Amino acid sequence: MKTTKITSVICLLLITVGAYSQPRQSEEPTVSKEEAELLKDAVTLSEESHGAAIEMLSAKRTGKSSAAIDFALATLFFQKGDLPAAEKAYRESLRKLPSFNRARANLARVLIQQDRLTEAEEVLKPVIMSGKAKPETLTLIGYTFLMKGESVPAESAYRQALLLKPDDISAYRGLAKCLIDQERYREAIGLLENILEKDPGNDQLWLLLANANVAVGKADAAIVKLECARYLKAASPEAIATLGDLYVNRNQPHDALSAYREAFSFKKSPAGRIFRAAEGFVMLRDYHGAEEMIGKLEFAPEPLSKSQAKRLHRLRAHLSYLKGDMKTAIISYKKLLEEDPLDADALIVLGDLYREEGKLEEAVISYERASHIKGKEAEALIRQAQVEVERERYSKAVELLESSLVFVHKKSVAKYLEQIRRLAKSRF
Image 1 (cartoon, rainbow, N blue to C red):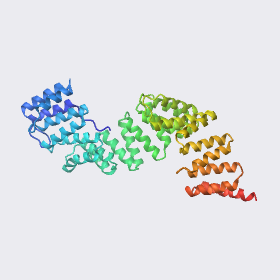
Image 2: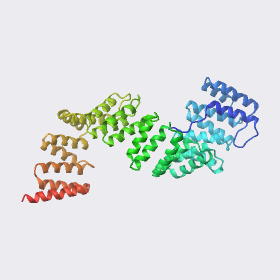
Image 3: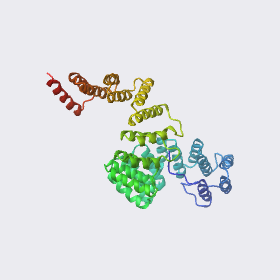
């Protein structure tokens, strides 16, 4: 999980070193001359080796040493990625000086990186109650609330941060996310467009703006925004993949494929995203795009999970169908059913394939099997009824449609049922 970055170790240590020569402040620790020299040495040593600097500070730290020593040590641990050790040292620093707000903010960052959001909130509460929170701390508080799904207090924190630091892009981005979470999309759009005038290279803001436009039904505007970001080379792979999704929704497979190629040109493109693109092309019945995306999945750098492998098998089967190779498609779906006889989706598609081939009896058998699987009863019964209509067995079709409405009542199906009833009556 990404959070606000901690200031570099060297800067933090230098700030702390300067504390011994300043008047004592309740929010900052003081150091002796010896401790100041120790911290200066740690600064120099950390440029070459974090480990050596940590070892040196650890050897000199005691229960009575300045909270600055613990703070510097904690920051070195954090930069090294040792979060448990960083947490322990920051807590020791706060034990010695509870009003040390920089240590409190950094401890919260450590906890946030471990998804311990409630604990981070508790750590930050004294800063909130004191009314002395700095803009960076208020932004961190907003982030903590936002990650917990509490967008209203998060919004309040971000707005306070912006009052103190009007050019804080992180706070603006957080505020925009709060507005989107509260479905205040038009406010978010206005805010984001204003920020992007000042920071047009921010890829996260472009994606947020596009998503907000989609939410208010302005997919065309979202495409324009993402194409602008793409032109400015300020679009993240996720933003470009989203552009591909929007083109799929507009039935523009050529443009979608161009976007997906760019989005997935990175070595570690997420498989789940590529699956979504492949399935989009399948939906458009565009086998060229589907085939290219399936190729990316087959040569993915990371091995696919068992469920993903099954999903890929299904895509290959449907690709065979799109290419007109019905025989291979039927064999592929049968293989899926050998692995999982209760795969209702495979049963329904297999029924569709048989039906297209004119093998209506086989189609009915496949639909009947699917109709006994929970959640797919209505869909399978409707398909079976359609076959019976094709065979002019209207009374049987009526029974099947009536049964489907027991599971899921749809007006379109009820209307279709009335039409078939009239056909059935006209036979007598």
